[in-house]
Length: 73
Image (cartoon, rainbow, N blue to C red; front, side):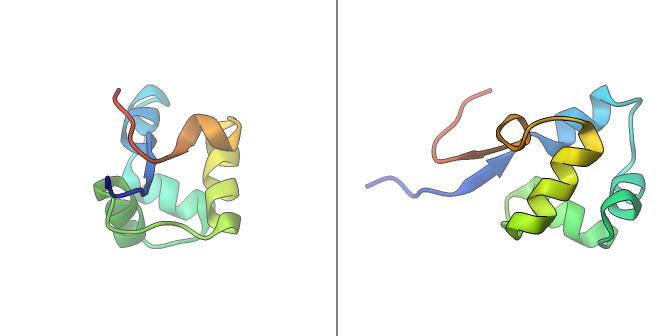
């Protein structure tokens, strides 16, 4: 049985938003840069509130930033 997890497109989205740094995103959403690093590496699943704040920072719906389960870009 495959392991299900929450994944994200944060790294790509940062690049597509004027090459936003991890620190800039962290400042926008009120977390540390280390939290953004952990999210991008898939080592941390955000709270629902943080997921919405990140999606809002990119001006996108939640499901365009995060996905659940297997996903191929």
